[in-house]
Length: 536
Image 1: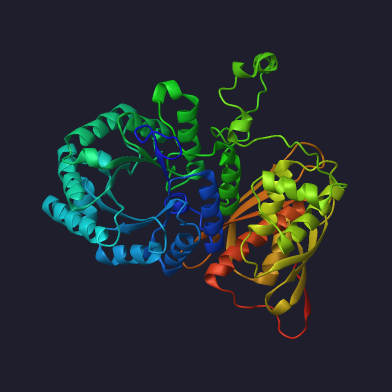
Image 2: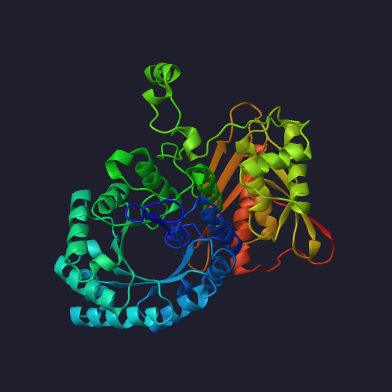
């Protein structure tokens, strides 16, 4: 047993790659501030390793990984990992980014399948073996913790994999990851491959074996569990299963499968499962990628029962139709009923119970928003508070701030919106526009003020709680109309769904402007500018 009472033989390290592989989801671009907030939440969740990014991808990614290494990579925190291709330049940048972490790791990879070697790398097997030897040794010269991944391992020649992995161990690799890069393999095949590699690779008993599975055929979680049963002791996962194409193995599914079926797996993690729902919501809000209602563990319907037979069974005994409880994953009911008469102390205590440590001006600001919400709602729930905090404190750095909004609509009539934004240099711009509906009119007015070409590709509305006074959440994704069509997500919450829609759209635009910069198209001179649009 280690100091936490966990048996090393049965402990599965949770390697979270939300900030690297997860961010490669279309439209999931994250700002540096959002990455830091997610990394801190992952540390609270209890992950063992955070793959913070791909430092060679861009200067901004390098700086984001460096900040996480410095601020989250404390001695009692998680290992901070940077990804690098098997090149000196990539490894240099990875080390530059993670060197301030108390526990740094370099993760380097090189493809080993014939199709990748022939068409992508244009390298022979002999060249791949030598590159693996040289680059793993080079990474090991910087730090003692080095992970190596043979990309597209599951479509590689198993005997060639044994050779490459043996060379990686000889050169100093301490963790070997077997990625199903394209989500091709089945659980039986993956378990058999993992057993072969563990038992036949020279030195395989001296390293930690890892699973990394994609979900193209919907088998990522099953494949990962098969690999763990076969002897792997690290699982590479993402929150909500986000990632390229169909995504990655879902952290919450792996963790709760191991926790719910101890007799089947006899494996444990250090994850605080009561943080799962909060982490899921944070990642969803920041990336703009909604969690499907029937998503396992964290979906809105995961603990909902509508069928009469199910409801009858639940009323008689919860275990009839629930193999885990809502409380297990952080869907707890508040012991304090918060409303408009609640004081600052009760509000602060509830924030602490939800995992938010606030004081000073941040607490004052949050309390003001809480009071505004409480004036509109009879009871403020935990979900309301979490949405309020996310909306107030976890949005992008604002280039434009919503100062006011007024909408007129109905039938017959012409939906009209008037928007007032505060922009750079505290200039206030007001614009009115006509749209096909109230939200369209709001977005038309905002577009005329900010004048940055983009296309709205997704717009979603959901009620956080039940009732006519429910706080509404809006998630949008926009695509930039120039320079490659990068997509950005935005999130807004308010009891007025039109206001929430405006906040979400501005959030996405502010993300775009933070990355691309902003050229002021508004007329110079007056502090307030009124422009009326007539587009529909």
